Length: 101
Ligand SMILES: [Zn+2]
Ligand SMILES: [Zn+2]
Image 1 (cartoon, helix red, strand yellow):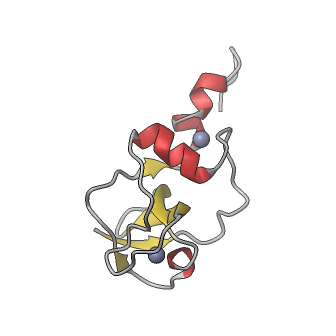
Image 2 (spheres, protein in one colour):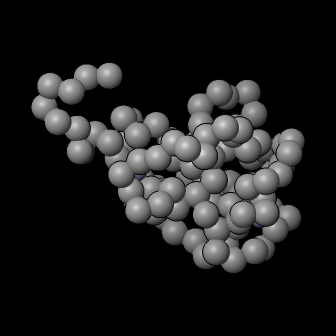
């Protein structure tokens, strides 16, 4: 799977403890390593990424170094991409009745 980093998303937040916690909760998966295929750094964070040809922003486990990469790179196909759109994921459960986007 080829991805790029999504630019200008660092201020976005959700109600989870971190974007990595958000990824764990929504994917039902966990990992202690960056999932770029040519990297094995420990302690990944929840990086904002895009798949090539898809404008949706997803959260995926990458180390801080890979989160700074410019251009396309390859990541593992074993892990799920979780939507970074709070309203479609974790935000639902905390929405007040009558709250519409
Ligand atoms: Zn969340
Ligand atoms: Zn990495």
